[in-house]
Length: 255
Ligand code: SF4
Image (cartoon, rainbow, N blue to C red; front, side, top):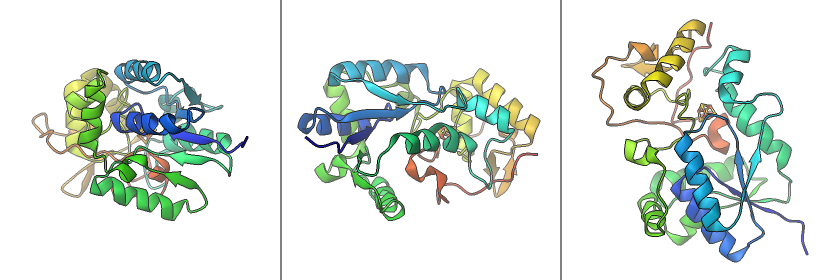
């Protein structure tokens, strides 16, 4: 008997489903964990319920003791994203994780065998050398496309965000404030016009220019109506999110 826990970091997406499936097959005691942002798309919660039933397990939700959701973090801090990072990441994801984890834990991630994910996993190992980490999809050579196929073949209905064209589904109730890509915000506005308007109005109120066009920081409601949605870049909100991130340049602090 060992008290060494295996934590599967569940993101409500296809890759982490496959990582959980592979891990639980060998270790049924592994813990499926997710940091609750209170800000996910309702269909992600539907997929989570379906996936947990299929895996015959349940998800352990790690919550902030200070904030109920991402929106509350922004309002209380009057800060969305900038040179100090995104406060929602620290409050809703990093603090609850640090509170929960033990030095002896084994951390399992759904990084896929695609080049970008392999590089990101390498960066994770360099930055968190003190942690024991695993990426079973990389070990098995399973790409993102393959993980989507595995989920569909298993009869589970994927979260709707995939068909909408989002590269990841984090925080779709507001849009992710770490995304500077105008294509991302254009896509978000297309699918979630009311939520976009709410996020845009608050960004205006506190002076947060969340996007960048031709090198110029802009408010997201300044993105032209016909802006393309073809290349919506959004950083993953994982362990690396709090570090200086090549995916995302710093923005000015809100007023
Ligand atoms: S996904 Fe984006 S909005 Fe959500 S917690 Fe992470 S940085 Fe904040």
